[in-house]
Picture (cartoon, rainbow, N blue to C red):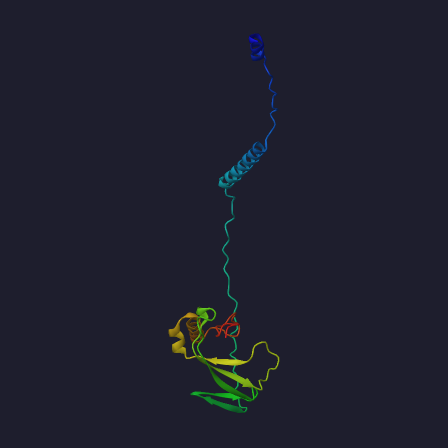
Length: 192
């Protein structure tokens, strides 16, 4: 029995050899190394200084200004048609009958800053709406809003910004309001 135990101990059991195959992790590492090498080459090429090319010197030429015509001042004739006089709470204006048959002045309460965007909240104002407005097909309802300018500026927010822009625009006599890209107005579009 002892010899049998010794014989079993001396027997060598061969272990199978695992072929050296590329694992998924090794493939990812190779791809990452390739990308890092490409990035390093790109960064290096961006950092490499390129010799400046010769730029021809500009030749100075004298520009002789062409005489410009003085723009003609358009004189708008004074309206001589009929007016309807609109009076309401100290607001008085003449409404040409060609514009509308009549107008009504109403008071709009101050906007509640908690109902929407607080920066667009406006103070109490009057609205002049028209009856028999001469332009029938229009996107917006024709209305004129009348704001107390001092209170509007004191209130800050969008009203103060627009009032200040409008005052600057009206004080600049050289500004062509006919070709202006944008003009300040209140209330902002889609906000009442």
